Image (cartoon, rainbow, N blue to C red; front, side, top):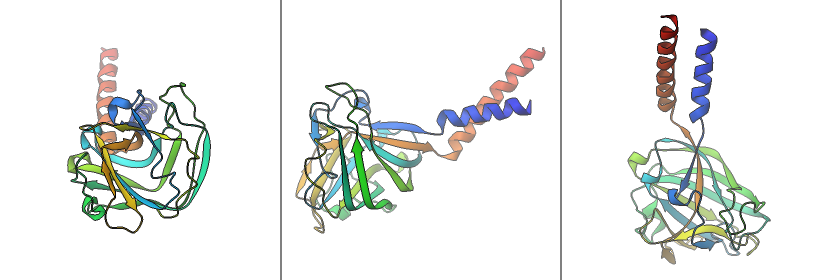
Length: 235
């Protein structure tokens, strides 16, 4: 009995210990309609903010990495190094297609530096010829960010302080569609305001570890099902 209960717990936790969420949700298995190198493949230092609608996330949890994919037609195999970059996440009240031109106005009170320092990005550019390619441009966070979509939208804030050799990546898959779940602003590093504010956004995959309460509820439910099954077997 103890062994079987432990097995139920293990299987329950394994089932939800890690979840992948693609935003926009509708592009999880569909190529976006645009491509964009910013902010990771820009010859000039830049600041880039992208907002993701809260309704794209199924629940609260720790985000411990993000990933992007090469653009289907223009993406290519690459490896590039960024000497100095900072990546922050925060909960924001700013909405897609309604980001402020003033960077500071978009940042939420729970702003967290999830990555800082040099960063190497690469892609094998695998997947169908026309896309969508695999999400293999991965950034593992130094500090996970706890995100509760009930508190607002999610803001990605990237400060590429050093710039990178331009054009190496070919292009990341993105979506340019007013009224969807993403949009962006970007401008010169150090400037308080953005020079571009539009509806484009990188198609992004988030790795989310559900909050402990979710694991506990699933375990309790699985255990009750197991107990009911055992009782029926005995009768």
